[in-house]
Image 1 (spheres, rainbow, N blue to C red):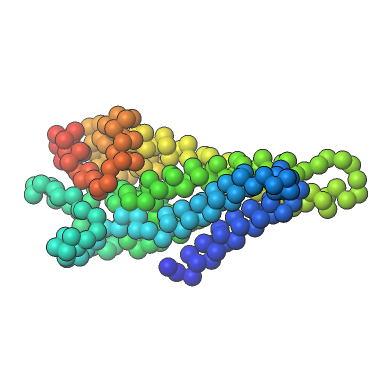
Image 2: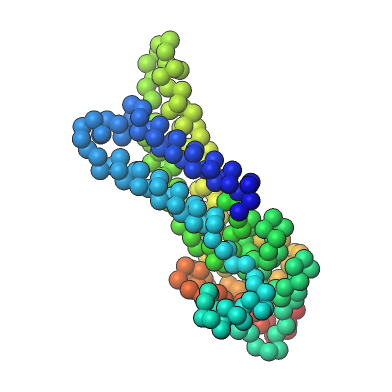
Length: 261
């Protein structure tokens, strides 16, 4: 983990904690419930904030699906460790990455920031300081969903503490909640757009990189189908959220395309 990643993760944690504590300490619905001894909703809110922070660190620090050297893969298989690497028929040849020279599975891409090839590469997220790939993409969606719930609830709480009586001290009394509400509104729009766009791409079994760069990707340009990996919404979602193994996308591709690229 580089120094840039530490700063980003520290900023995320500090901002989340400051907003949550500020909403609890100001005259909002949550504080009023605390004063009445109704602690259930404040506790659930804090637990959701904590859950979102833990999910953030999990997605940020986990292996997104880095392609391993062949020697390392064989050693891991012998010891029975790690994720099972899908086996390909002998007649399917993998291309070598021009940067790290590893055999690159279909749908993998080399990330210049991480200096690794990533399986089913989606994008490099600067807020996570990590790639989103085949192994952490499902958890990334869970994180976005929990974060959206926290933001919507936090926006409602911040709005509940604002009062609009005209007085000289109006801005002084409302400045924190007003800034918090505006920040939460911006983050909510960003997270909502990210979540909706990712769910759409997942339902089509495509990635952000493939969607944005289809004309530059050889296995998509030469395919007879617009999306050779699309197996229908239900199977796409099941494979994404429920499959515990890495997928040999070459098998699906060559099953649908009669001619290899």
